[in-house]
Image 1: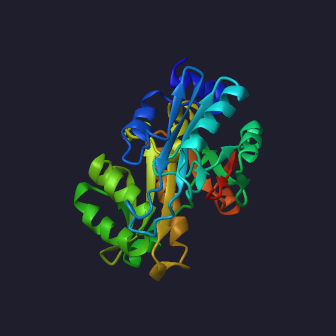
Image 2 (image 1 turned 90 degrees about the horizontal axis):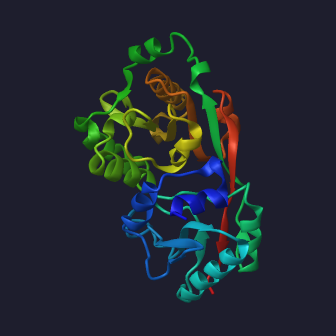
Length: 303
């Protein structure tokens, strides 16, 4: 069986992925740990280093991440997981998913057997479940006349170009200097040249908000929730992360940014849209989004 076939057998069509994503998110990724990873004909477990400290300039949490785990039988899963844990250096915590370039933010709700297996090997549940939310944008309508008052206040919304990347870099370094900055500026804009997918909110000539979007027409490198585009459909897209600066919060500009982003995706022909790894179910619910995937974070403390 190919890796994609093993993955499909483990998680089902809701989480189906293309074979090429293993190259992008595992073997070509700078944090891949081949010496800790395990693969044979009955399954695989690919591990990554903690990106903090090395990528984001933040304190190194020293974690090891299970990026991907698939198998034919639970007996195979137990054997592969045991082999991996035997290779983990002493004193290193292990987390399921949540790595930079991740597939999962936790174990899918549809896989309680993986939760039980991890618990048998010393893992425990960490907090509430994360959610992926979905909405068919063919039914989305933004509030009429909401742009004109913003423009009269010197506030503009629009897609970024290559020329806007330095301003976006300054904003994210100032407001969201960790993972959001790295994923958006370093990878999305500079490595993949997909600045055209980023929505920016300009206030008086300065970027004070952004929304990361993906869609079936202009995005070549799926990340996060849009990993599941095979299930979402051929005309799918994604939105998030999204954020505004501290200096403009409380002015409902986040909602305007979200509405603009969704209108942009709808204009491209996006039908099913996903917002991934969030706890803001009620907020996004106001825009028609509903939970379609849930994930339980799992971690093992240092041994």
